[in-house]
Amino acid sequence: MKSTFINYSTLQQLIDKLISRHGTEKTYHILKRNLLEKNPEFNQDCIIANIIANAAIEKFGLTTKQFKSEGGQSVLYARASCYRLIKMHTRLSYSDIVRFFNETLNINKIRYAIRKADDLLQVPIINREMFNIIIEHEKMVEETINSIP
Image 1 (cartoon, rainbow, N blue to C red):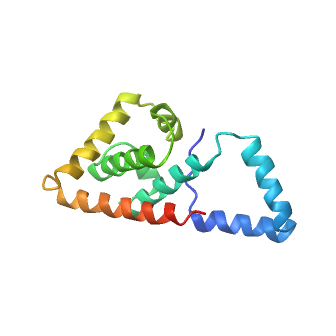
Image 2 (cartoon, rainbow, N blue to C red):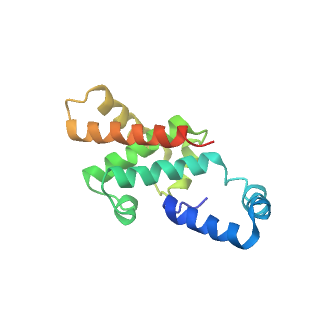
């Protein structure tokens, strides 16, 4: 499963273009046939994971290229926050999360990153700035996920 970071407005423009060409009912059947039936991996969990990753990029003030590269404390916290939220809000396994991010990491590093994010949230005094950003990221994701029909 490849991870592609497409912002919501771009996706919405593409869907609007498809609807204007084919109409609502035919667009629904096209999307259902091409995405949901041919690609069982393309499901709500992957959509939520993409929302979480895009929210992290925005909230931590990163570019997609920075987010995908390794290094830098804010990048590491952003990724750890993503892993944690994806594990909380989806049924994706650790190996699915590794595949979603096209990582060469092993599952233990994902688990470690999730524990680090949990630890930071337990003891916010260690790094108050990152704690606040992670909390804001979590709130943003919660609002977005709750608005999904």
